[in-house]
Amino acid sequence: MNKILLSIAAVLVICFTACAQKKDKQNVSNASSKMLVAYFSATGTTAQVARNIADITGGELFEIAPQHPYTEADLDWNDRQSRSSVEMNDVKSRPALKVTKTDIAGYDVVFIGYPIWWNLAPRIINTFIESHDLRGKTVIPFATSGGSDISNSVSELKKAYPDLNWKEGKLLNKVGNSALQNWIHGITNH
Image (cartoon, rainbow, N blue to C red; front, side):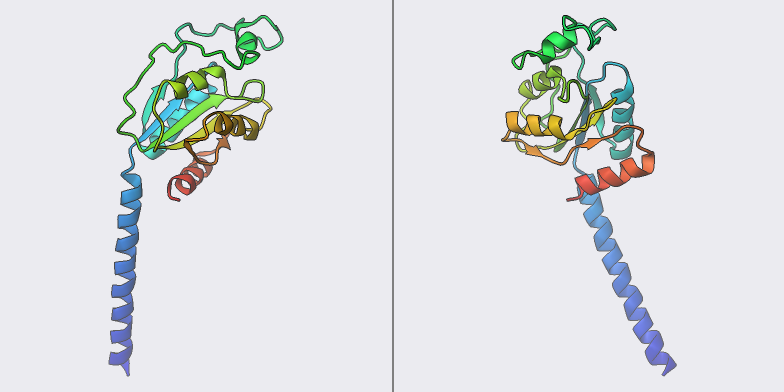
């Protein structure tokens, strides 16, 4: 009887080992997707989140930088004449990029991060999207905000660029590493 139980236990161990190895190979193939973490950050908050995502994913970091950096006065949302206010009030505004192109052909997944302005992605995000061919890539938006939710900004991006393969976006204010890892794992392994 003991020999039968040991034989059954040995077979189960072999089966579990084979299943675990198969699962590890699946995770490696998902992890082999080349990722770009592109972000725009006016104050440094979104930049920090982007760095954390790049660290977790092994993705390459790319700053979506304006040709002319925003000053504190440019970001004054209380001033209707400030640069950010003027841009956000003009749906056709496309602020120029410092570096207009990065070779994204080799990337499978593109995270796009931004602060939420006027419940939307800043217009420079439109400039970035329109300056690159993102068709066939998985596009994952993330944002930071002082008081807005991400849903409207993502909805508007999806409406403006319906041909892109958008994944669920996430607001990442003060998100710990464990929660960030869980979100990334969930969104990139589906």
